Image 1 (spheres, rainbow, N blue to C red):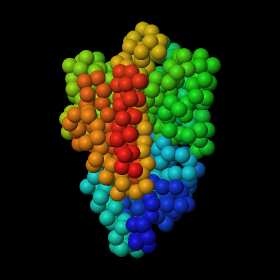
Image 2: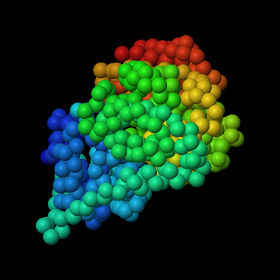
Image 3: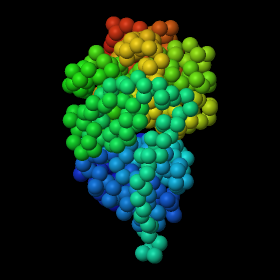
Image 4: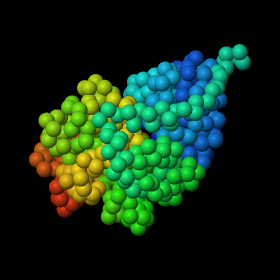
Amino acid sequence: MAGSMVESPLMISVSGVRGIVGQSLTAEVALRWAQCFGATCKPGPVVVGGDSRTSRVMMRAAAFAGLASAGCKIIDVGVVPTPTIGMAVRHHQARGGIAITASHNPAEWNAYKFYNSDGLFLSEAEGASLRSKVESASRFDIGAAETGSYEKDEAAIQRHLAAVTAIPFLHMDKIRARKFRVGLDAVNGAGGALLLPLLEQLGCETVSFHTEPTGIFPRNPEPISDHLHEVCAAMKEARVDIGFVTDPDADRLVVILENGEPAGEELTVVAATDLVLRYVKGPVTANCSTTRALDDVAEKYGQKVTHTKVGEAHVARKMLETGAVIGGEGNGGVMLPSIHAARDSAVGIALILQAILESGGSASAYFTSLPQYTLVKKRVTFDSLDKLRQAVAEVKGRVSFGTADHLDGLKWNLPDAWIQVRASNTEPIVRVFAEARTKDHAEALATVTVQALTMTK
């Protein structure tokens, strides 16, 4: 069995594994990963939770079987947002956790994301060690007397809510008095259970869209502007002051303005940072694909942004290392380490509502006041990983952007723009990002880079 898994087209990342259920991700594969993780955590406890997608019964059963068969006590927090799981790991002083979610991927996908005892996703070294166990021929089954136990934790959401509403500089009374009319679209994922009561506690009148945890996604669940046309129109028609959209596991957050336009996922963390730095001075951390608007806002408050490789695990560890007070990722991920170093849509909502309140104007007026850039994203597909590697190696000699930074792929920082080339570790795909003050400039930079890459094809 272990040999077949090495050949499986699973997407294996730093801290987890994902695939299409019934194809690359079968019950057998899922159980193997859970059991090997359990072997590193025994006797536990291990916290397990996840989003609402329809394959959750199979994935939960495999996780429970794998963990129990390795001798771990299981604490089940049920269908909850991913950040709630990380908080529960710390609350229970658990040895680890499993989030059962494929995040923004379509419904046919699912995944395990693994936490260590700090409530953070596994580091590169920890992830590599787990993968080595999975791909080995080792067995971790134990006898009946040592099999793990199970208990239910039904208070995880309430603890999460209490932590967010206790943010010291959050003016709950003033937000309640404003009586925001808020649209919320949780794409029928796990977010409704956390975000609806949060908005209620913030005194908001909520207009709900797809907040039941059915796992039947009404559209492609990745909350990017191209997927939000219908909900944008619906929120405009509902005359909301502001709208919020999450992905299925509610760690990413996108803002819809009162005029029915998306603010852009890149500005979510910028707005949150603008609010936090008014009250708490300190460094900011974000991945190296995050908009330069974040650097501009940090500079306004006399702070600097430390950049990391792409991936929440990298950002979280650097935040703790540098003592960052706020940060995240440009995909709608807000991370407030005083709560926990993880992307959290609930934190983002609370901070952004206060930022708009303090601005004294509308959501659109506030977001327009933030530094404005246009980020263009393109992708190039190659016939093989070898061709991909050759193209990336040669592109530096074909563009005239100056010296590239190698933190994560190749990145060229220009006075008023930047360009990044990042290759997938699992697919023959290269992603090209270009950001500039104007769309035409960003498009031109991206086009030149794509042309340079495709010369190898």
